[in-house]
Length: 238
Image 1 (cartoon, helix red, strand yellow):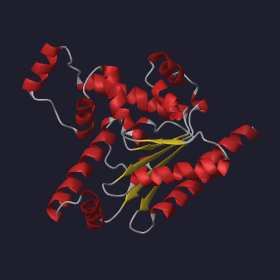
Image 2: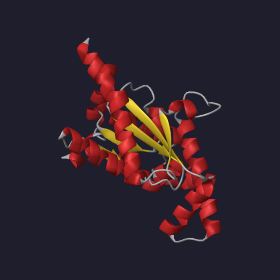
Image 3: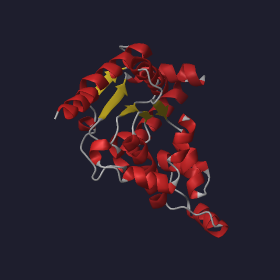
């Protein structure tokens, strides 16, 4: 059932109906942005489990990379094309020519619009924990939203990446630095103008080095209740 709903986001008519919803019906949504090596996917999964169990429902889900493959299918292009947009890798002139001759050329503008439309429709329909993918900037106007950022000391994250990917210290350092920059750029890409800082986008930043995955999931669940559930409850009283 959840997978069917996920595929529905890529049906243009269905997505248009979601995008045309009145703002007061948007959400609820939780976005998790993260520095590299902060275990965001595991935390998102635990938050979803918390919310579904606490409210006795099965509505909540979490989404990460699945978006890339479905957007690629919609644009009739390779998933690598969408992945490269997220990574900030520009096409070479030769690559553009090959894609143009093959009939599979997809501009950055089309990829950006497809990502924005799909991510925004997911956020507007609600009951989703969205990991990365520019969610914090694309969904920043949704009132019933909680925006979390995961951070940790650089070398704590490097060590975490070394263990998970089984790579050397130097490789992990390079990976963390490059991935941090790409994730920052994705967030900025979907903002109307380039800000001096991204801090204002987030309701809270949590140090992964200080708390375990389950502890952070519990904190996020509590903050969701303190902000979003409270807002929804107060609106219903009016």
